Amino acid sequence: MTVISQFNKLCNFFKFSLTAICLTVCFSSTASALDIDLAWDASSELSITGYKLYYQPNSRNISIEKNETIPVDVGDQTSATLTGLPDNQVYYFAVSAYDQMGNESPLSDVIANGWTPSLIAPEHGTNQEGSSYVTFVWDTAPSNYPVSYTLYYGTDPQLNSAVVPLAIPSPTKKNPLALLLALLAVTYLIFGQKRIKLNLVGATCLFFGLVATGCGGGGSGDGVSGGSANNPAAAPQTTVAVVAGKSDYHEVYDLAPATTYYWKVIAIDDDNPGLRYESDTFTFTN
Image (cartoon, helix red, strand yellow):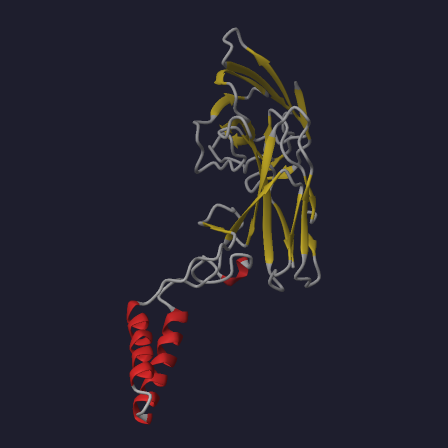
């Protein structure tokens, strides 16, 4: 299988352009391992003396500082072969360039050795003009990919902060003191019929008992402490996870105005939950 993706990126230290990376995936003689060949165009910047290949399984969130694997320094070569990689995983790749002083460029765009979800709407970098409503839309997997989708969106650019699940109402906890007050109130009302004073006391106890019982000692009622789970702007750097199942869209109605949101989709294999297909991360301003 061959995957071709276009890259163009400027670096802080020097210009660095990856005009194309072509991946060829083939099975090695070991049935449970992969050999992957990668190639990229050389940079036109004369100060570049070598390249480093970064890769990791199951997540396209590759960074130079925090990478799951040690990068492969290929020197001045513009190709590399990775052998014996465990099969049944999706691998993500990016390349950096460096000069003779060891200055390293930012990473190229990330590509994968297989299908990953493509994000359709809202488009990357768009402005929703203050609308609190948005429909997230992504493409569905090919028929030979039995997957279910999870949507992540929020104000965290990395979408990897503590994930806030969708609100699930929590049962209200009953306050024992409130129940006792209510019981006393009923007793006063039953046995103090001839005494107005006792009736007033009973009515008062009943009122406060019912109020306390209704309030209870439970949580916020939406299952989330500190704000609505459907409104990531309620707390800084919040990420909301939506289990979309087989659906290829999700509607949100309460986005905060003048707020930048980030979103991505991860498709999880139904037969092998450890096999994940992660999309790019898009951003839009509400």
